Length: 298
Image 1 (cartoon, rainbow, N blue to C red):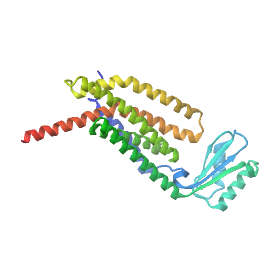
Image 2 (cartoon, rainbow, N blue to C red):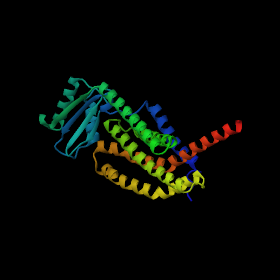
Image 3 (spheres, one colour):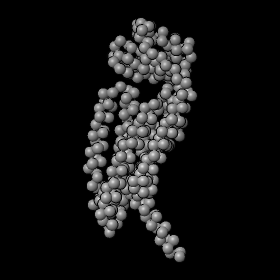
């Protein structure tokens, strides 16, 4: 039989090490790499007329034609289109950059498809909305799981959700993936996926416990995890496959979205299978020990 409950400390320690690494990198780098959506700045869409562009050369050319500290990045968009992103830049400097690109690559004015300027205050609003949406989702899930199962399962599920989010944040911090509006979608996607997986495990635990209350709760949890393991792995693989295809064939911005999404899916499966059930056992044992101590004092 699988001894998931008995090895809970090992699984929890692995997660803790990964999260600590993310926290250290976050501190050393001074936070996440923020995209224009959050930090504010300029986004310029240009049709280059061809797709065999040397992006390294283009990025260096843009750096040479913008003020210091602008930190421009170049990403491939659809077809022959590219996206240039910078931190906030003045109108005069922006116009000079446009003229330089048009001249060097022999493009007409119509090649400049769109130019957007995002204020930093908009980024702050997006951050607030992302945090609020995640907190509301966590609270509603806690209420739902508490009603369907019990308070301990709700707490265990929320702890697993926090675990999954922290693992995703570690990926953003370590690989310096720009945090943008896709970040919100990735977080909420993983939260929804993880809680669904966790509820499947909890549901099987409840069914098995109702059938066999003589067995220890830890044994029931181990049996239930074994019974749902095949389903959890199959669901994860079928969900990962289209995400992997997006990573392989998608443009840069899509890849930035799929990397943390893939890690989040794996983290969600990890927490649902290896952490959620043992956490329920841990909290159930803690409550039983408290009752024993109270009875001993009487």
